[in-house]
Image (cartoon, rainbow, N blue to C red):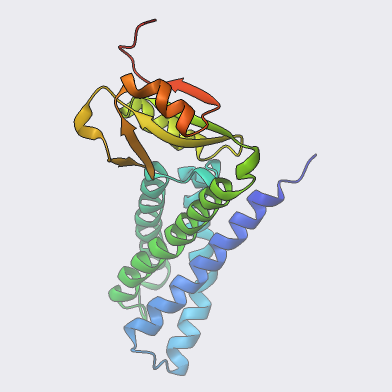
Length: 217
């Protein structure tokens, strides 16, 4: 059976973030001045937090996503996982300890920190991967001109920025008012009737049509 090291590394990262969020919550609550009792409470309850939050992260489906394609739905998964996890942790701790020695504010701080610690690294990795693809092997990528700067064109350029085989150079659109506008860093060069001159001036290799109303003409 093939071991999925990438998924294991993501799970390890998230467990580390859970631990850091739990510690940061205590540090914030006690203004970075923890006594022996607070440190003991934090460490004793950490395994419970890891187990409960880990189960929730898995069940919500956070590990079915791919970091490179992290987007709004993944942010929603993170927020939902943290919310459900925090409630579940609160319930478990209440059943076993009646929340003695665990201020309610610790749980609130934990939820905020964990949302940031899980979300920000994924966002940074997404940006890094997109930028790496955008600038890698530029000379070998096909220079693409997209016809249509609407929703279909936006989706097309977004996908091309994740593929090192294509380089979106610009848009052409029927709407002259869009000239000079930018979609995902790709500029609208003018109207569709400027196609021949734009293709020649920008050394375009490929023209992609993203206009649902386009005709053969």
